Image (cartoon, rainbow, N blue to C red; front, side, top):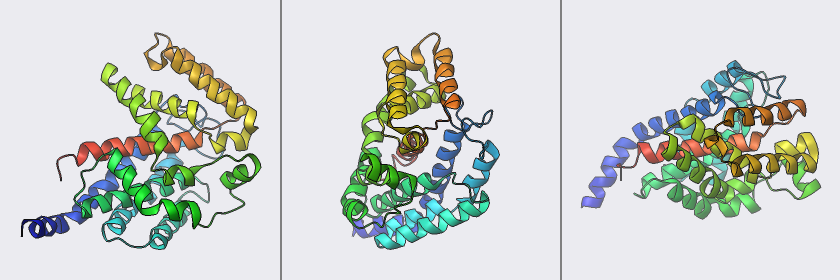
Length: 292
């Protein structure tokens, strides 16, 4: 009898939880784009390596995604099929492209956080405690097979062209793994710096550089080839080895990396997308830790 009551209570709450989740997802994206000193990426004070994007465009894009993450959370809760989740994402993508005059600001975020939000919904439905690990496991258990073997890939997308040309895996494989890179690399770096500094911005920047040091970022390869990827990974690794954002002169170090990126028209968009996932997972864990 208790279980039924718990589910009834949760059913009444699920729409409210989904609304809160929607705000958390959009806040994570806003914090990601608001973060200064991201090499080659848009923030409030610079366009980075992007001629066609600025901070205001990203704000409009995030605004256009209102209710999308709520919808995907409810999709997960109600256990809709893989194709319904994909179609929901495609519709959000169209709304985003309308808001940005056809400039791709958040395609990666729609894909990544769409599945993450659906996984949160499934965790709610199954009374599973919400944290990065449970979200990751839910994605793997539910959609890994379909993502890797049944999802129709666009052969003309940047990511798929890099995959066929260089054998580099991208966003689809990362989601299918349950965001293994986020769990293994980004979150530990974020938490370590936050514990030492209590500074979310520095922790976020450290997580971004850690992602850049590790990720086979198809955005980098698209713009600069494999050699650019190796240079970028090495720059990020050296920054971390020297202490990252705990260095006395860390701002000058980051500035040097920023200058290199802009000079060579590079943008670590894949790493930025995963920073958004990192912030989202941390927010979900914090917000819903006492729910179940």
